[in-house]
Image (cartoon, rainbow, N blue to C red):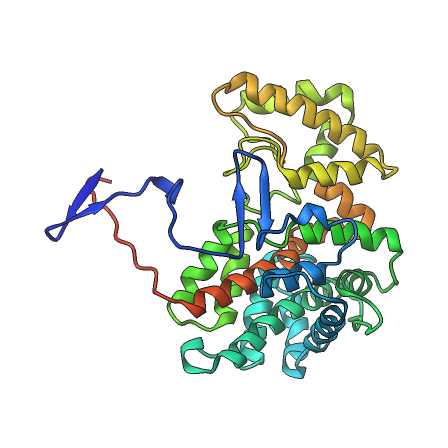
Length: 378
């Protein structure tokens, strides 16, 4: 289909740009038919049991997993980037007072403020090295800001990161003030690696659109968090625990889910814009959840079984499976992440992919400026 605009025949893209390639990327991709995704050609589920979040981040930024020497150097650089500018620290109590503990909207504002605090300017007006340093520093500051805002909102003192702890362990330490166990770190690390990037998703596209104008990287990254906060993107992660609590026990699953579907409401933790088969991230988190001594695991397993059956019985032409969010809450809770911080932990992970995508956009930029079909009578 085409539409005439000022005498020019323009192709009309489908709603939501579904099935349209708007750019090229070598950062990551999702094969929704095969149920497979990768970072720079590497399957993250292949190293999630032995690798660290820093490994995944390094891979996304540089195109290969780090050597032992690279790993230590990158870990040290990430820790150095976690240092909070004094002017930003001074602003945090006021920011924390703007919303409840764990508010992703407050985090979005804090990342924007951090961009100002570290001197971000339009990337077109500064050198590439400075821009890269700013991008990586904002990503490293995100878990620091998340933990600090959460603790301040609860009337607690900020906990500083420790040099002897890695990224995941430091996040848990800064949130809770206690060094986490190895099992807790592994659980969080698994989630962070799996969620580090996922193709040209809504938030990644949003940040690249913002960056394409030459805007500073703080604006692009805070815009990405804004997109991720929506319930149709990443905002369902903190709604699944509420769903499990509302269902109560396995005997109520089918009745509860049928009632919700009959009312035309969505089931949180099911379906995906790209996957037409099993979400590989869900497969890994389900396996991890099975090893956790938590009654919600059995409930989540029954919710998955019944939910998939009900959804596909009602719409046989549109196969749907559970997604990453169904077991994420159980895993994060086991790791020691408070439920109020589930939503904010998603951008803590996704910053890894966003940084790589920002660098790619800036390296070969053209401003996104599509046209629209003008209609009357609305």
